Image (cartoon, rainbow, N blue to C red; front, side, top):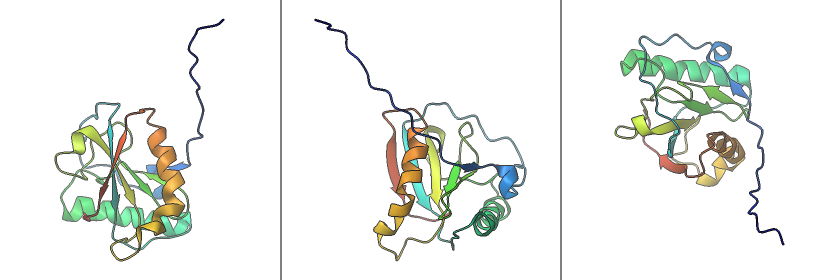
Length: 155
């Protein structure tokens, strides 16, 4: 009798990630700190903005968020590591390796993902179409202990 323990591994395709160059992102005004990975926490935000269903509609929203974070908040760059839009794409912010500016006291130990749109008056079930993109992105961190946190205060 074989007493070896076998682990089941599965592969989940990474969702489409629109690079900073593809959405027309500005260069950071400085170099954000390096994020120690893997992280155990993923903080989910909403942007309290409009949304779009095409890349052509979503990219300007991401640029607007970056401009607000840099010009109004005085941050080095867009605060989120990634943003998810209703077009089904994920937009690269600071990426996997840079500390975000999205949740004070959590930035240096988390990835910040913003769902583009305003969910303050919409039922949370409106997020369900984006659920698979969020799950695929968080699973791609390859950390079985990742914890999702929901942060509903806009930046």
